[in-house]
Image 1 (tube, rainbow, N blue to C red):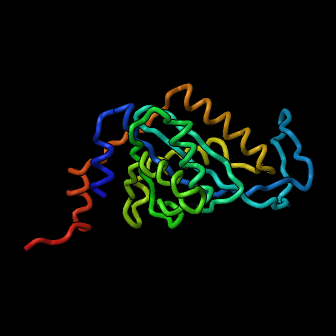
Image 2: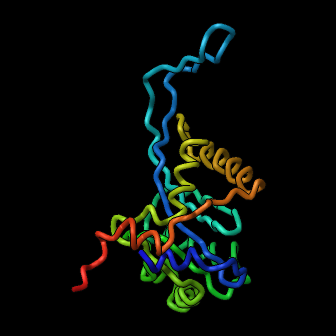
Image 3: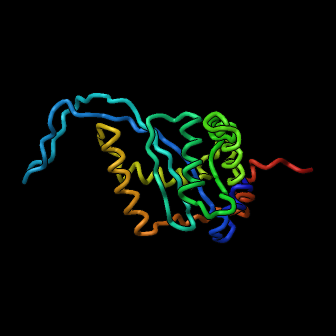
Amino acid sequence: MEDVLEVYQRPYDPKRPQVCLDEASKQLIGETRRPVPVKPGQPARVDYEYVRNGTANLFMVFEPLAGKRYVKVTDRRTKKDWARCVKELVDKRYPAAEKIVLVMDNLNTHALPSLYEAFEPSEAKRIADRIKIHYTPKHGSWLDMAEIELGILSRQCLDRRIASIDVLKREVSAWQRDRNTRVTKVNWRFTMADARVKLKRLYPSIE
């Protein structure tokens, strides 16, 4: 836990950007009947029946100190999908960075060996050398600020029926563009000093 909190206390450094990564799934749901739009004196009406169109995965990449986020929508959430997301992070999002400081939870796909399942060894090693991973502890995914952004995305954009992955990509892209234009950041205040007081029970007892 303190490893992640120490990262959050570092000042902004464009050569070593602090980036949080998390992912979530979204069920794709279509309508069986055309919804009735809102009218004067009458709310919008939607039939309770729906059709399931599968699921999609959303990778949230969030740089809290810069107020930037990027959401990558994929069909699945495999090791190779994570590896491709990290490659894009290295080559497209932060090509000039000396090292990307990457905070994320310890899901089994979120590991350097996943790079070797997606790319040739030399390419996997090149990508791995560009990142420094800091894992949140077990049951401590709340320490990943990308999880906060995913919660905001869910409330502001995804809390409704979305029928297809194409519509999902379009809606998420619009949300992302608006948040980045406004340079929306997270006001993170939980420090190591706070952890040692409020979460004292999690520390070993020294006698």
